[in-house]
Structures are given as C-alpha cells and as structure tokens.
Length: 75
Image 1 (cartoon, helix red, strand yellow):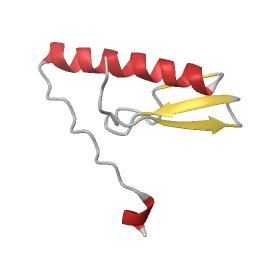
Image 2 (cartoon, one colour):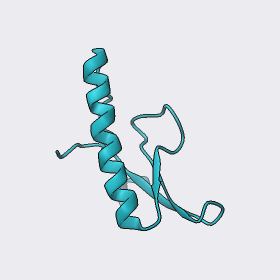
Image 3 (cartoon, rainbow, N blue to C red):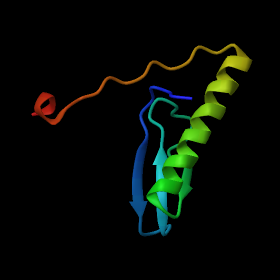
Image 4 (cartoon, one colour):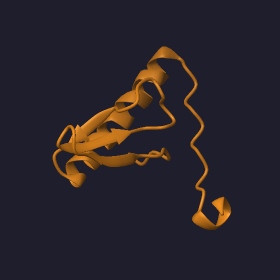
C-alpha cells in the first residue's frame, strides 16, 4: 500500500540504530527503528499501514500529508 506520508529516518549513535519519525502522526517522537536503513524503512511502512488502519477503525480523520518543500523554497 502506498501512503502519502513523510518518513524521516535518522541514525542515532546513542541507540546504535536508525530511528523513524512520522511527522504527520505526532503521538510520539519516534515510531519505530531498524538496524539498517532498509529495515527502518520497511518498519516505517508497516507502522504507517497500522496507523491508517487504526484511524479508520476508530473513525478518526487521517492527518493531511505534509507538502514537499524543496531547498530552493526554504532559502
């Protein structure tokens, strides 16, 4: 399932793994992790699918996807 949400993956020296943040779902700072970038991405996609299912089951509206901001728009 393709979901139009932002996935931020950051390496954490403290945790020794890649941490995943899903900005449109701000219930916690980090939602999942992975020992490799690919594992973190795969876990992020799984968590997004579960979050969307949960929102739909609870009748909550899904968050609006954040628009893509390019570097030239920020400068």
